[in-house]
Image (tube, rainbow, N blue to C red; front, side, top):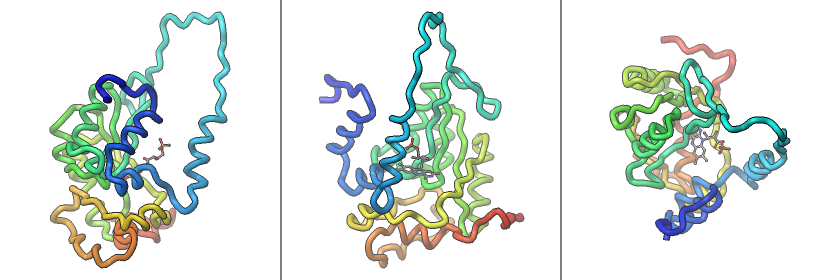
Length: 221
Ligand SMILES: Cc1cc2nc3c(=O)[nH]c(=O)nc-3n(C[C@H](O)[C@H](O)[C@H](O)COP(=O)(O)O)c2cc1C
């Protein structure tokens, strides 16, 4: 079906994803916290931006290229960090990295990736940044920063918006399974998650992420 009818916009990709993915995985990717007011407003916010056409301007040659931290790219569109791409495709972040490279854009690999830093690095030559959550156990975060650095990741994208995971109601209902974080293999045991009721993802976040992180904390070592 997709071969003959290529989707022309994001909504059409979304429809196809809904048909193709297990409900638990679709709901995780699609869902937000609580009543999803903010999620809806994030989408509505783009609708409030109006583009004012300026006519009789020569647009035969347009240049959308930009530069981010010293890296040239053809447009200001990059791949934001999102967790667990294997929930959507068996190749996971390796495929995403290949797609980013083919568009000459930059990929931010999520801390919660389902492919290893090393696999992503060796599978393509996209410019890549690494997204970092700060764990209670600082040694784990530090180890991952060093691994990313030594595999050609050029910057750390520090994420501070998750002192605790939002109350994602669809995940609670689906008893969302915490997808394996490929890069934690051998660094920490995550096998007691099955004891959690509701969203295992929420328990994983509660167990690992540091809710005390603030402007005042320094990170030595
Ligand atoms: C399914 C999903 C997973 C995400 N995982 C991460 C993550 O692991 N780390 C992170 O820093 N941000 C994560 N984000 C946030 C995105 O990077 C981005 O900031 C957010 O989706 C807003 O951009 P958008 O309006 O283009 O969706 C995730 C978002 C989604 C939808």
